[in-house]
Image (cartoon, rainbow, N blue to C red; front, side, top):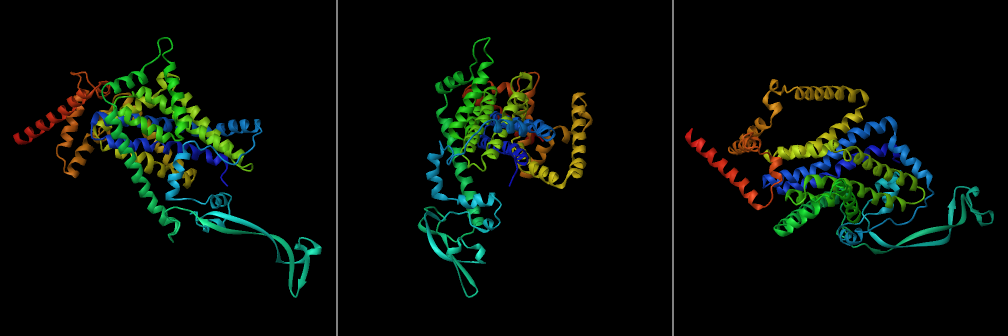
Length: 483
């Protein structure tokens, strides 16, 4: 079975993976550059927090086993007995719906987790929901008289030895009621059917969510919510607002039992300008903490033989997020995720195709590459890691001394890549509009930047932005006709 030490890096990776949902949600708002930039920043602030925490805490864990030892001390300090059922909360509402689509056999899952090789050949799909176990006292054959239950209940007939023994027979009473109960499909085929179906339901739900938020959160309602959520406490208690937001995020996530659901809900609100990025950040941190409390309560309900390991790994998850909050929130200049997310929001608002590059690399290609390198062993890890660290150091050195001009433009700007993508896709005005947007957003004469425009309120500002892009199309058309 998986040990706690080996599970800790997996928990850190799962923390990164859970933030992909809110990042995908932002793609629905890509039609408006301002809205998309704000939303993408609001989603990726979660990504940057997780990535930065892993970059610091994973090496610390490998060197000191900090999470393991701390959680081990706490687990051994309390005498906790396991229970039968974990907390359900929102699952009470969702279980009845999900059971109409599919039901899994938890006994088979438990056998696989325990290392039973025969269980791997069994189907995970639950067929019989109502069974009856009947125990009878029957004659059975045994290899030799030593295997008899009692000398008085043992006899031999020819070459066979018989004894009386309790035998349990399981009788199937009623089948489950879900889509695949009467099919002959394999587990893999059912998985291939359910995966696109679940993605379709998820995408539809997110689109409806954003449409509803857009239709409801305008005018006086928007002003009231913005004033309530983004308002700080009077001085000298201004700093308390952020910590209160952390508690709110933790509490709301505990109720819905999913950090992805909570962050996917506040991300469109950041895009609409209802919640500021500075307020969304502590809400997200609280959501990261809140999702660990559900795991702790579920671990407390584990059977006695797995209680200690289950509780310890859930505590490791909790301390990982607490350590991340301590690193990246209390000191204002250490709130690096906000700065990185806002910069990435600027980039994706100008070059919207970069959002897809970010998603593919950070959540698919990047983790896959790191997995392959880690499986290859230390020599390969050093052979790849040292050059990458050296390249990163050189880029930071060049940027610090303002020497980026010595590098080719395709290494320092996305504009050449944007021009190439525009030529490939046949969209000849996209590059010109993006270039106009870049000049307009960072022109020193106007004093405006994308971050500054994010603070503007109301639909009038969005109309002005759309007029800028309309004007840029006219300019592009005139220039082409003049040529």
